[in-house]
Image (tube, rainbow, N blue to C red; front, side, top):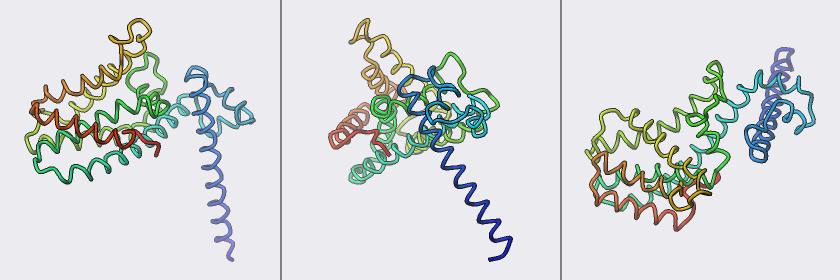
Length: 249
């Protein structure tokens, strides 16, 4: 073996080891956030969780903001993978449908209901996703946004594809797909967050119920035919009868 080959293998081994250790830190950080909330996650608590020096943690994540960004990226990538599982199940059923407008509306409903169900079935991932748009305190500083935004845009891109497809067959009438997606995601997230007041009135502040109602209202507001919205609701029910819309990837 040449000196260059040995050096290359050594560098590759070190890189793989670093990636493994970084993934270990991220898993530990996720565990702390799940147990103690995001407020309970500090560089010190992470170091204690993995029995490491705080300085060592900083060699992987230069700031708490960088750590949060990587956690959000990891969480959103898991959400995308989960959505793909549900989308694939949905497409098997929709292959039997003949009305392209109804199919397009059903795909929109599947994404919207995935977003809603993920809050309960993938709560830690959804919590980190919602923090992008709903936290009063900015968890990720501007200089670290580049770590998480590609993953966030990939998830929103899935919804944008659904909106574009629905526009192309005139199933809905919106002017700008991404603008519609951002408003859609923000509206559903806001409805879900109303659940934090459920202890005051569990019926009025039932977050998932509000979000589901909002989802139907939004599709109708975009110009979808009521029959298509109702058929989409039935399709979602069929999917849910066979398993969660937000499976663990």
